[in-house]
Image 1 (cartoon, rainbow, N blue to C red):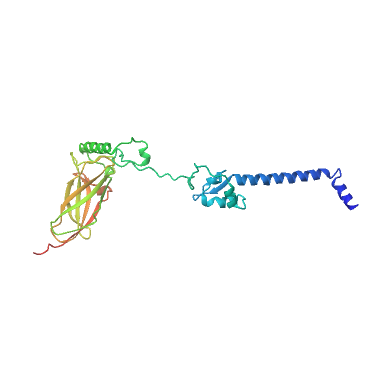
Image 2 (cartoon, rainbow, N blue to C red; image 1 turned 90 degrees about the vertical axis):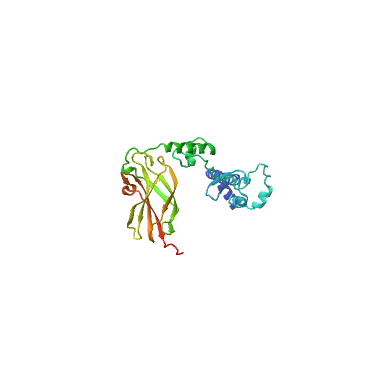
Length: 282
């Protein structure tokens, strides 16, 4: 009697729609669970060492060391068994860790800009590719053009933008000994520099004492190699040490003869320590 009542209530006209709704809802949940399982197993996702997310439907596209972990995260209980039963990868299978290729930038070509500097990679995209021989020819032509530069007018204070550098930081010599100093001069001005013309530019040296006071203001002069704006040239200076022993500084600067020293307009001279020791007695 009790079973009959329960069955009658479940199959009653009023309770039938609820039963159908419950079955439909349960069926929908099962379908969604099944679909998500198929999706998770069929589409494998992983992060590489750079944090980039990758998706694939082929487990063999996943790096070897990550395959079992990816399968386990995708819901596979036995990754090793899954890999054993999986189809054999094709012969053209890419090697592991090849999904984000690391392409090294190409080496810079021996291409120079109009200012004589080696062009950057971005600049080379806009410059024609030239051989080393052609680059040397361009440099020679630019040097010949620089030799024609003459200083026929005075520079303005804003044109005194030059950088002088030297690998030599300290020297030791005996009185009147000849010294060799190698320097580099970079023309950071918008004007060309040259030691030719009515207002030539020279390399000048102040001789300073140990306290950096002026011992000889016009100690040395040398002609400057002609250079266009942006060019950097190296020069070798041969000077004589002071005739008295002591500790000195050599302040190397540029000077436009009859106009001004570059230091007076913001340029910074390079300082080299010089120690003059007494000559050995014979």
